[in-house]
Image (cartoon, rainbow, N blue to C red; front, side, top):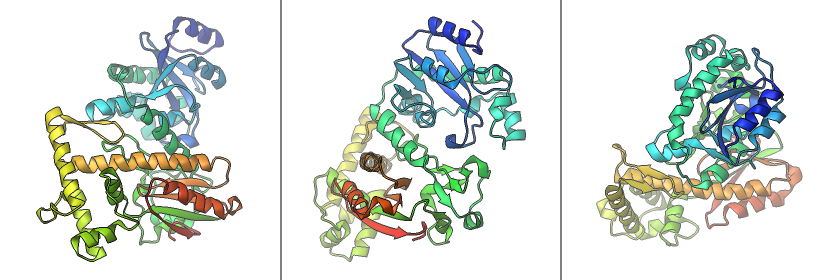
Length: 429
């Protein structure tokens, strides 16, 4: 059977010959560099696990093209659909489909992920160098070259297809960050251009709205958020750059967790630090609150100092660090808070393992809390538009009522963590 499926008749034949329960697909967008919200589908690479690869064109200049709805119905016949980057694919596929993300399986096995751009053909390299600005660049790259590229990619990912990973990564984790980033952040162009230099505006900006993109494939499982040369997780606070981001609705509300990591650790060890953890730690150490904050920071992230190892809270932290290091040395791996396995790595130390665990604990807690808020906002006009580790930013519509503001705070504090609120007409507050 020909590898390029251009007609309904060929698609029906493919259905009959590739009737395995599971398959691998790769949606190839118009341009790999554009945010998935701002591009469309060029073609789809499809492969049953024991067949050759096929390309199904949706919008390609070289071929007849098939309706996406027909192709989608064909994909739906499988009970397991393997993809590279589920968050990306969910821009085009329903979240209800049985999609599993190979990248998490690879990361769980070898502490790194697969970069598909490493398998670009010379044709891909040439076209992207000369026509990087075209939203439809993949529509003019020879379709046989897409097939050649993803045939190579499949051989790399094939050994990992049957590996197991917690369903948490495929469901809650991927879905909530796609839901956040697709909304976008409105910008004031003049202020934005004074502070930021995207690689190419059209990659992420449309109608004065910029889209973020969370990278979920990190060792710690904590998402990073750098896209189009802008690090949204570390926007400068004192330069006025944040004033470039404005609400699409009426105003921004930011909920910021107070003393988040000490609170997470205290909850983990069943210790009550009260509503102000640094105040409690200052009493334990007999120092000021500011000194307690500095000491806590150094002991959590740099290892517990000798002079604090017999002090409450820090004694328990030191015990956890030693226990985790012992498990890691014995088993050559350690399981993080969301059940991802961190394998032996030359750069790992006892302190790093503890920090990675806390970051995974933070991420697991945040995903659970944000899921509640997203569900609460489903029928409202307000939206979560940015997540930065210990805070979430709401683009608030006043028609939702003041009770929405207080209810979100209640949801975020439902597991005992305390939040502070800021309100403003831009992100600079």
